[in-house]
Length: 146
Length: 257
Image (tube, rainbow over all chains, first blue to last red; front, side, top):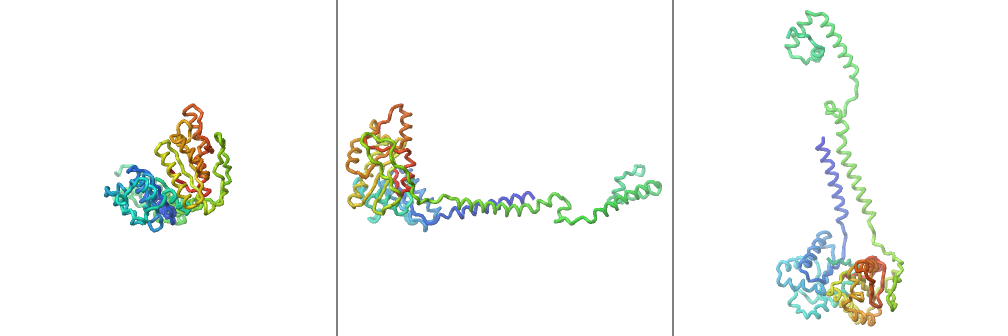
């Protein structure tokens, strides 16, 4: 009898938690801009991890995800040319629809060579990183800076 | 065994046919020799029969198991009822919590933007836009909370880049740099690494304001046991984070340096 009792309570809790996950996990469509302007590799990798978690929680098909790099954030793409693990992460995120945007002013200020930045296309370059972030926010994007 | 006094207990067992054949034999023998024993047996049998009659019309227990353990009658129903009840309560709780979740408010807040005090030259605080968002004008708040010189330099660089970018595009823009925590050091006379640059920027751009958090000033005063003197033209507001929240609610973009 006691065993049945326990099973019953556990089932109830499980159902309740299931309901909560269904309701809480449904975040709907989201637009997010992640701001990366630091050069700490650990922090950068942490940011990519956050982004993957974010995708997992919301669903790649429901997300419009942009990463805007400026300031010292360009080092993310620079170190990726030598770091295979980082390359994998970037490729994986790009496959899930994440856009990696780099600030044009940052490129010219630091006299960067596009060849030294992993998988950077001209379409990925934005005229001004902060202007892009401000613009995206005005378009309803949430702002996150891990 | 034949010399043993036959107890009522034995007789009751005899009546209930719970004795072995041998014991039954003993009692039969004893009865033939002792008339009082027969009488006792008779009385006990009467009581037995009366009891049976009195309890013969009891209502049927809900389950056969109740006969062995009557307390279990109530417990059999419990698990399933409790499952449903618990699920319903949980579901109800989740639904209530979901409907009560904070909605993003679009109503503008009419906060008074006048600063508590300003240094020497009065600079207007970035005008409190009453929520009428003009699609033409961009409004951006930069947030600096660290006295790291490279971060401070970066903040000023980004602000200038942005202002130039919008100037070239002929786009109206309002920019506010809110400092709190140790970030206020950028705007303190004693500690600012770029006082001349800030002054130049203030002169060049009238759509730019440098804001300091009063709470952070108070904390700094307590920490350094000295009055905190700010660069001319800086604006003081009550709380940095409150200002950030207010601005975001008013539709400002937020960039953390």
